[in-house]
Length: 412
Image (spheres, rainbow, N blue to C red):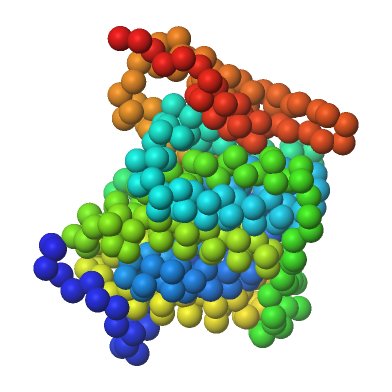
């Protein structure tokens, strides 16, 4: 495996391979903006440019594609409802700066500093909180309601049939799918749910008819907001830790040690720049896509130049006005069914990281940190000081870090 060619080469003949990589990422890429009220066309543009920026920082040596991060869905939904999109973008841009700060820390202290400052005992429960907070949104959407459950958009019986078909398809493809099909379970779930929605006549095509073929994406610039920063930035802790795992995963696939060369400090810095850039234009934060890593392993396409093509195709699609309009016609229950699995998976990822850490979770120190993070996060604990407030995931993450730093270590 270590003898495979992983040198960067940008060739015209690789353009279809690049488009195929984007196809693998497509379902997950569009899911975040569709759920959070952001613009899908902007998400395509920022994913493409973000990947190119990542390649620039990492010396074009890592075959990774960057796109919309699931970890930020809950804070984006809350932020958009509370402060609006521009203020939410301010908090997301600050998350990118956190990545960059961590990359400098890694450069000075080595990758092991992350485990000392942000151990699994903190990041695991924070990831779980993200999934648990979103659970009601998934259920409401699956029942044909708005995310807050206030309005019934589609009759419940119809919505349940569509959402469960989407859920069932996504699960079956992830379990039984072969080859490339297994890498796109979300996309398959959307296709089946959308087809059923057409059968039930609940898809409105008027936005597609009225949309232009060519349109500049609806970019949004950030607006300064301290509350949004303090609420959203702690969420970036978990995906920052996961980033190291993603880099190890692509290294295992290609047989290269990317932790050493170009260095995890460079990959995280690239992730940070891509996230901040995306937020400056109104796009969701970027993260490395494990689906695409799976596609790299399956196709043995180790040339990072293929990801350049994937990025170029994403940027081109961003200017197709009708694409965003088609995505906007996807009915709520189609997404709801997929979200039941997706948000549950986020919780399981957090649980699994705690299990793999191999620590005694009932040990008083560990128990205290995990318990406080979970209850503060899921219960909606909030601290107020005048106009300033800190609540939800942001508060849970900060409290977890503080408790980990101040509570005495268990003596053996």
